[in-house]
Image (tube, rainbow, N blue to C red; front, side, top):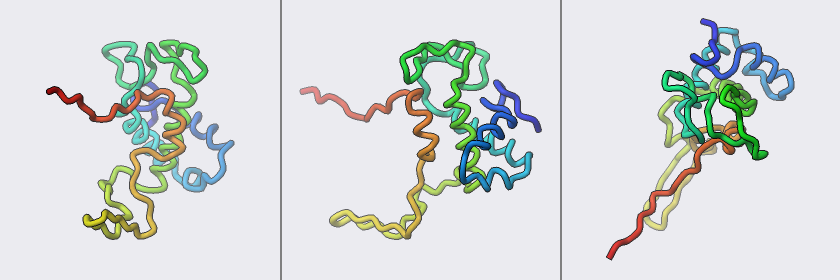
Length: 158
């Protein structure tokens, strides 16, 4: 069940291992079996593939969301059409770590909600954080490469 960059991953298991050698709080990663690490990396790649990226794919037959064309890095440099930015690889590793820690695929949009009240609007949590689509570390790495979210507003026509 090896990972294949360009088919089911942006990063190899070896690259992920190297990334985590410089990272604290990785017991869930270092304690996992290689097979589980590969599964987590594949799941993370599937999650990242569904995001709305800047630019466009480099070919019609491309399976993965990266590499892309027409993307500028945070420093204003054009990313070549053969490059997967290190931030994308690091984000996949971070997402894989988060997936080893907890099941992020479960439908738990109400996770942590103890009570919701409509009159004078009130939400009470039971100490657990509400579900997020991406962990903060992943969102921070990816934000320069994602298309901006456009709110659903419409102009009124009279």
